[in-house]
Amino acid sequence: MDSKNLYNRRQAIGGIGVGLASLMVNPAFSASSAGATAGSTAGADAGAGLEDPVSKYPKPPFKEQSQPWPGLAAKMEPRPDHGEASYKGSNRLAGRKALITGGDSGMGRAAAIAYAREGADVAINYLPAEEEDAKEVVELIKKAGRKAVAIPGDLREEAFCQKMVAEAVRQLGGLDILVNNAARQQTQKSILDITSEAFDATMKTNIYAPFWTVKAALPHLKPGAVIIATSSEQATDPSAELYDYAQTKAATTSYVKSLAKQLAEKGIRVNGVAPGPIWTPLQVSGGATMEKLKNFGGDTPFKRPGQPVELASIYVQLAASDGSYATGQIYGASGGNGQP
Ligand code: NAD
Ligand code: MG
Image 1: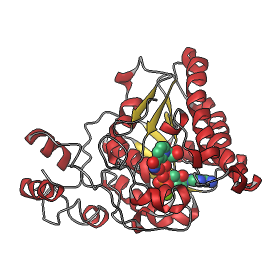
Image 2: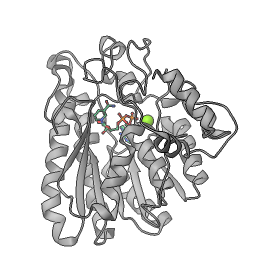
Image 3: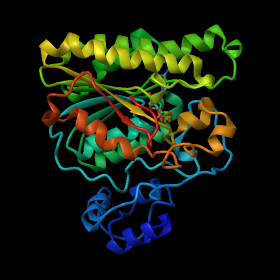
Image 4: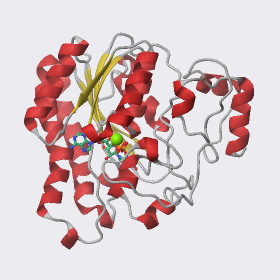
């Protein structure tokens, strides 16, 4: 089934929402028909039959595009699918309190939407330049009937990481899901082109910030709480042009495994997600060369990039109480490549 037919079929089922959701979803994925509220289509489709993962989402070649860092999902073509019109919750995280860094776009936004629809209150952190994306996420969380807390600020500062956690705890009334998802990725052909400042910014964002954030959060985490890190297939299969970024992802995978052992006796689980190529602002704002971007995901067995929504249920599963024996694990989603 080609993607056009898939959308028509969804439209026929009548499951795509109106208003905000129809504005926000990639027009290619959405149908503007009146119908049920956002978040009701996946179930309808799943119930109706199978979806072919090969033809489900756009494939390369992609249009040339670049944005100044950190980039906005709102300006990408095609717009990424974070589950705005499709993620359907089933109360798996009822009453939980989550803080997600980088919650404005990409995997963080997909997790934020899913968590809210699963019944959690959600605080998102992002950079002030990403307010436009963040506003959409806040609206979606509220639309799911949950509390949304927006905490803009730069994670490269320890004081901000501490303030962010304190603010999340204060406004949510506690914290039991921490998702360390924000990251910096800037592609450079040669190690000689990586300045000490750029190297430092990558280390601060990807390694120091989770360290500072976990330290600030730990006193608030009770047995049953979870920490989830976004790692990458780069942790185990680093690209030549991601010398600095790839090693931070190896560090992420490592801290997940170390911290899981350390925090087991407290009843706190620590797991990670290792995505392959996913269509997010990080890639169009310096994360990939134009050459790589045009064929993004084309070298995976599925011959397309993943969409953030395709990882949403992984973040849910790692947070949910019924997955209680999983800790120190890295869960991959990379279209057939990579072995986390
Ligand atoms: P994204 O651009 O949507 O998300 C990254 C977020 O990081 C940004 O939205 C921004 O809010 C945040 N961020 C960056 N620097 C920050 C700073 N100094 N202070 C505060 N926030 C900051 O892209 P994404 O691809 O969804 O990235 C999410 C995670 O997924 C990252 O950890 C990334 O390494 C990982 N990942 C992405 C891919 C991919 O192909 N997109 C693949 C593997 C892993
Ligand atoms: Mg963003």
